Image 1 (cartoon, rainbow, N blue to C red):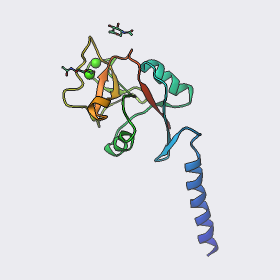
Image 2: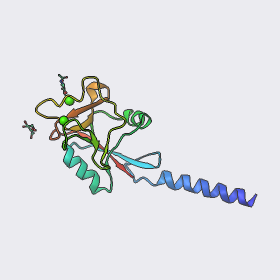
Image 3: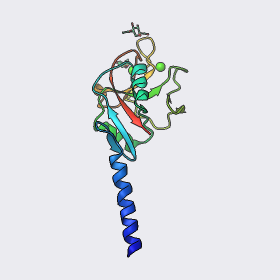
Image 4: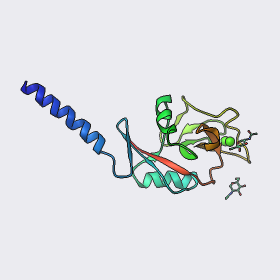
Length: 144
Ligand SMILES: *[C@@H]1O[C@H](CO)[C@@H](O)[C@H](O)[C@H]1NC(C)=O
Ligand SMILES: *[C@@H]1O[C@H](CO)[C@@H](O)[C@H](O)[C@H]1NC(C)=O
Ligand SMILES: [Ca+2]
Ligand SMILES: [Ca+2]
């Protein structure tokens, strides 16, 4: 009984710490904290802003995570880019090529002279689009 109570308190304590871990303004999901910006920046400045807050632009490697974020996402920068090798999409903060993706049909199209940065697109119901990196959008930071 004592052991059970100890275990219960320990588990409850862990769950409480995990949910209380996120600062005000950040959303908790699966042991990580997410920040949906109110301001808009180009991709590089968005990435730098996340890093200034001990975070990175969000990486999405599963449909479940995409579904969680899709409830909120509309024209938000993600961490993906193909600026180093055209057509080779990778998550910049972890240097991993995409295994999961949610491109809108016809995207990525590298239009307008070279779109190299990944965003969720409002006009595509939140599906992914490659956009010019110097355009300004809101962004999602993920603290790992
Ligand atoms: C290519 O992508 C841009 C958005 O990045 C979109 O506005 C444009 O319509 C697309 N072009 C074609 C031909 O699909
Ligand atoms: C963004 O980059 C494109 C292509 O590199 C360029 O044509 C355009 O003028 C730039 N826009 C801004 C706002 O810097
Ligand atoms: Ca490109
Ligand atoms: Ca595009």
